Image (cartoon, rainbow, N blue to C red; front, top):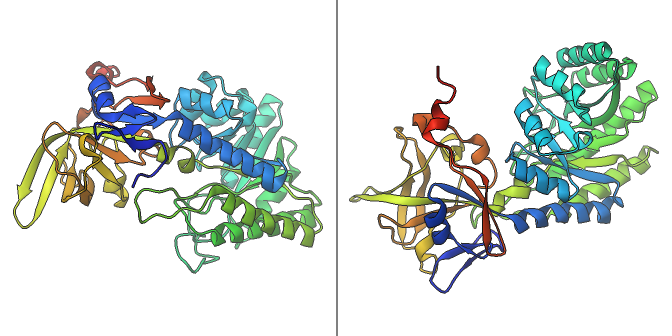
Length: 432
């Protein structure tokens, strides 16, 4: 029934996470409340580490894509598990540095990094700066020259693969705001320019084909395309690029309709393709990087709400209104994303009601889910929404001047706050 092993139902019939009663957590910390299970996060990290050992003899590294959820405690956990970190803004980088994360194990992404962000990356010795376009390359080259340093860089490549169709269109993704295009020759010209620069060291080539992908074939095709580009760079310039970053996008379970592949299934299949191409091209196997984000934290998290009212519109629908909504989870409003929900007080009972879970914002589209099957709901009940560990807190807002919820981490029956609940004073602290 549940999306991860950290969830269960106790003797009271209440939903538990990491050995903690979710109804008790809601009473202790208030709602809305994000809750994360630490061991589920650590186990995901360890599965990636183990898979690199099994498939690449340890010649690779996972970089947690922190845009999924970035906070100091999560940076610390990722560091303890031996992963690198992928950041996409000055704010994410600042958080990582304040958490004590090793800057040499950070990759800095983004399609339009500001001059301040580039300076911040160079001044703090970020391991790899992922270049997105020629204008950014020129700015970075100039800044590195001014500082008298050599910037370690990667290039984001558009491999021409649409992972969200089953045709795997090779040129379908040329229309993207991210990266250098292969089809036009732009990527090769950029690689030649980076290699010719005295202030840049082209350490890596990178691609990312999408998100929440369940099929393995698009990842294999992307790896083969990138290996071909690596060979092209070698043929034209004589330089063998050391690293190849194949991005992230591995799917997780949101509902029973989702059937994600085990991480090692991705890794082993892609590794065979990479090694086959390396042999075909008579080139060394590159150091492989991946950027899992959602698959590290997504299934470890839930959001707890308090039901405020149940509004029955005969023969139309039933609205179950909660004390959160699109401010803490905008993904349904944005993407119509599917979620599993339960009444945490009655998790051991069958789901018998089809309802629309409605948020409290002054927007008709502020919904968490439509046609959701849940237990019979009543005012005061605790409602839990699963798989909210990724792209919920990180995409949250203060629309309608609603404070952001806290994040509580649980482990083996104990709980602690890792991000405090915002107050009304926090909302006005920058007002003048």
